[in-house]
Image (tube, rainbow, N blue to C red):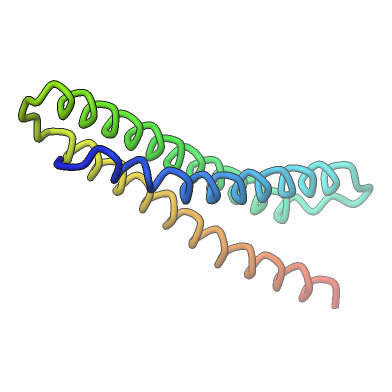
Length: 127
């Protein structure tokens, strides 16, 4: 990798994704806790929400992994560039980080579609 700063510039964007995903995770956990505390428990709804929570957790793991891989890639590239040696395998670490970030984004997309469906089901069951 010619420039060590390329993977490091992607980290703030993924950090924002992690922040928003953690907010979703906290809100969903609170909602599940409220549903469990209700007198009439809808087990099907709680199971759906728990699957959503698991999906959000998977997204977080992929995003954390992506950040770690980008940091490692930037460090390796920077160290080898300062030592003026040719070490091209840092690009593979960066590509793995990109794939991990994409998997996290795919999990978030799936979460979004399922969240809308769960809300629609909740509305239809109330009517």
